[in-house]
Length: 288
Image 1 (tube, rainbow, N blue to C red):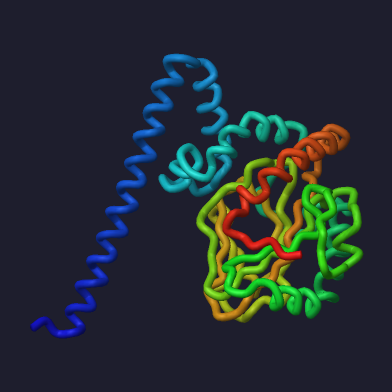
Image 2 (cartoon, rainbow, N blue to C red; image 1 turned 120 degrees about the horizontal axis):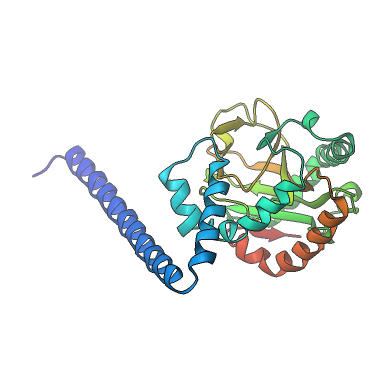
């Protein structure tokens, strides 16, 4: 009879092999579909396909750390929409100030900083109110999103925090992102570079198991509760502790040289994103 410890090790090895086989089959299936699409594109729309491949390559080249996983997900996984929007995103870059990927608050113009600081102050002042509301509604959900404005459109909410609900000049989305205990996202891309993502942790726990990764950078909340970045970069968020994580979640219009054009583009994005919100955030519970 096999000793218990040996049986346990055998089960763990078997599980790892099964997971590896599952991942391998998934990758082969993705690669097969991608190959068929590329071959069809080369036959029917060769110039358009080459144009998109060049735009995608330029988009990926912005990363400091390019891995197979990044390329696979960009062209064959959750980054496909980012790839399809890459010509528009590259055009947006031409009308915007330099994009360094990850920003400090002082890297942004004064008017952007003022709006961010006001919202952060309101978030911290009302932290207990937020926690009570989340405790009432989150339950066993892995992630929650308490929304106040979504691409500048007011969202219904039971709790009221005037600074987070009002219309701002540059901040277009205001919400509170909640991760339950031991929760993480997969690596993914945001779709559109009209805005930068601003996150502020309400009460960072003294642990290096709670962080966000964007491209080759790791940001530990315990070091700095504020993180501003271009979310079209490959990124993921980790909360590997037994404590709920609360982050103020904002999208702010990129500093640019064509504000009127950006305002119109944000209006169009608002019209489209309203209907796609539940698709992009299908793993989240929306809280009112």
